[in-house]
Length: 223
Image 1 (cartoon, rainbow, N blue to C red):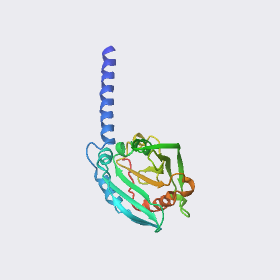
Image 2: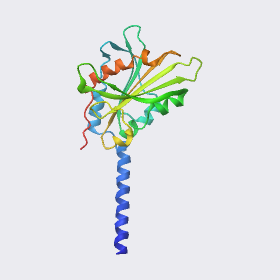
Image 3: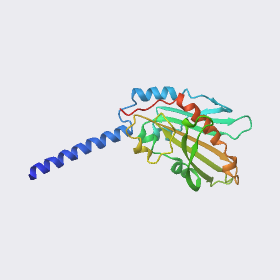
Image 4: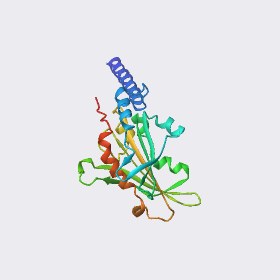
């Protein structure tokens, strides 16, 4: 009986070790991007440069440090503006391994580059007029620069597996069994002393993103 118990325990340890290794490898895409992820990446980069009254005024790419941390298979880095004199809003759209894409949030990254977080992170709901079926939720956090001008920075972010955008908690593990994960992050810089709730135009752009997303996000079905 003791030998049987020892063998059973050993088998269980081996199975758990293999499962843990497989899970970590899947989270970080240790075996490379799958064909479905490559398809999702190719579709994402077609995301329109103009959305309603918002148009892209500048395009860029992830810095090397962010790229190495996130390892996206597809990325869009843009700055958009509402009309000619509107406040610019940066937008980053990514698709890649859930272990990387789900692990990093502005609360950690922004605070590490000279900003102080103001208040609590909040969840906001974005529901485009006449399209309640496309409703999404997003996290929003407010930061103040520690620099001389003390400007305000608002950051919004959410994840998706090809359906609605979600202000998820524990995204890294919660989406771990999906073949890939999308992330959207938007940032808006406002003058010192301004009221973010009345001067931040980002929610309007989020409505446009929510409207456009179904045509450019590919469902990451769990097989």
